[in-house]
Image (cartoon, rainbow, N blue to C red; front, side, top):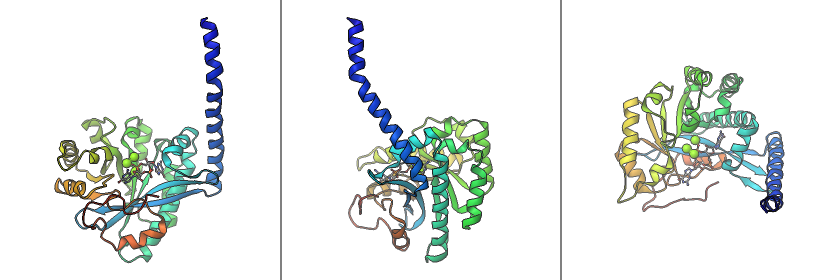
Length: 293
Ligand code: C2E
Ligand code: MG
Ligand code: MG
Ligand code: MG
């Protein structure tokens, strides 16, 4: 009977597994083509001075414009890109395009002269021997000063790093590039480990910002801001959707924010208009002013 059940189990299970595998193989093949066929586009989300609403920089976020499936979010294809190694090519593409774009805005858009660019980096890219040379070449070709580039690495990715990857981080920082820990608070790094990392910025994960409500629990954000101050790091709060979150964070000493309250990620063509606008200045407590890209 056990044998029969097992066979029955296989018979029911197998087609699904096959379907999922086929789907993955297809998506992977498509992703190879996506890089060559320029289906990967970069959108930009402003980083905002909490006190003035002024844009101090943008974060580059990738989108995949799939010819059949439409726009695919990074949560769907970045893990696949990491597993296949395609992330190196994708990351290099995003870095080049975003550096070129921000360098152009700095030269041409009044008020954008000192704007910064943040680009996400996967752990896999830290192991790629060509990373450092690629970054140097892109800065050189695009004219973006190294000191205006921030590379973001998630806390969970940083925790598993070995010495070679840490050396790469030190080398990037020696160029003048600033390093940020993304999704901070979700990855269990100890204070002593953080202290040894060559980082400049903590990005407070959205989950902590979500906990701030009118009646709210500000203790975790308080603890993170205290930790950042102890380590001499600046902070950016992610995922601010409501004015009251912005005000609570600003009152606790977090100077920079990012989130739908200010602006969702937008197409490059929309960024110049945002530079001269005080974002989040609308009265009341609006969520997304536009639908996110
Ligand atoms: P992240 O770097 O932490 O980026 C912030 C994410 O939160 C973005 O999602 C952004 O659209 C979203 N977000 C910003 N403000 C709000 C808000 O107020 N409310 C809500 N609900 N969401 C908000 P996105 O663009 O889907 O990217 C997801 C993640 O994918 C990123 O998280 C990053 O880890 C990764 N990613 C995106 N682009 C790249 C890339 O070029 N390279 C690599 N390696 N990873 C990337
Ligand atoms: Mg990020
Ligand atoms: Mg984040
Ligand atoms: Mg994230």
